[in-house]
Length: 213
Length: 213
Image 1 (cartoon, rainbow over the protein chains, first blue to last red):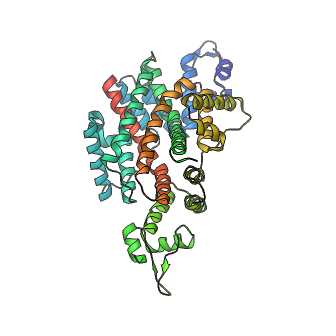
Image 2: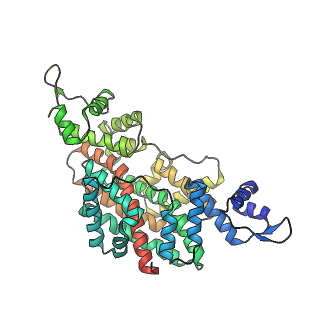
Image 3: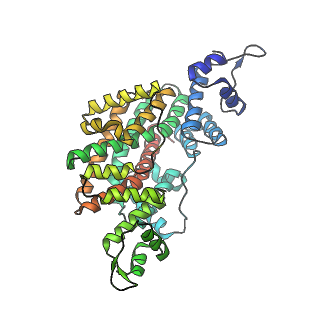
């Protein structure tokens, strides 16, 4: 398809597409004349992902470029490739390492991962921003006096494990490798708010059922 | 306990506690001399919640005051009281109402709630910021070309229902009414990041198991 069609199919204005091309967020089309290029479905998909990153995820352009480089790096295994993409996203601030509450929270999380048998998560450990953010949050909860140890965390982890299995089953239905990684990155940005809002609605529903309005 | 003890038990410096007292985020202690007041466990609990709202939730002082007013309003039923408290928290921006994608997303969410039998959620509908944010997010996903209809949403909603039931079971073990509402508000701010991070760690784990690193 031509640029005009790409713009129409994606709902992204032509000047914005040209900007993404200049910033190398979108690979160039196949040149057919001196002034025209041909785009395909991979451009349309990539355009969606760029919109998701920049519009919804509010990711800076330089960071988006880094995320997309990881998505495209087929020398890496899928988990590492996905990890590299997701880990390039902006992360919440981390706790100082020498804080005793942080050290205690880290051993709580390690014990949790052992009990769950999440061996890879255990092995990757503090390399993963998800691990480090979990540790920081557990430390904050405990510091504020809200109990958050392995017994409190385990049932939530088990539920989230079922959600993650469902995520990965869905991913398995997508044939192409680069598309799998793209969808996984988009899902991380776009589906998390869906999960949270479903959680809050379910809380409102069950609170009303249990306690009345 | 005296102010110094309250500060020590909570880890909140005395000048900060005095500021919270002046801003009416913390109810005054029982005056025992012209210059001294006595505080109890309810002050300690409230202090934790104020810290959670302001430090972790980054809620402005005026909003925190509004949230706490709802927590303390025992003329309301528990679900409404909790709703009033949570709904006073800062919410993500909403989509314009006259947008056709938003209208379509609203009917997707309505159909979802019907299928789930979440009757209260359906009845409260767009009064709830959780409902409105879900609609906005579903509209964004569809606009970007990521399918997000009732079939995609239902399994996630079922999982989140189990999480919410667990939340409410935990709440049921807390004896005092005002404490229940306080804990529920703190949990909404503090446990959501825990859920998200457990979800990401579970994804990393199961991606590695399914696809290798």
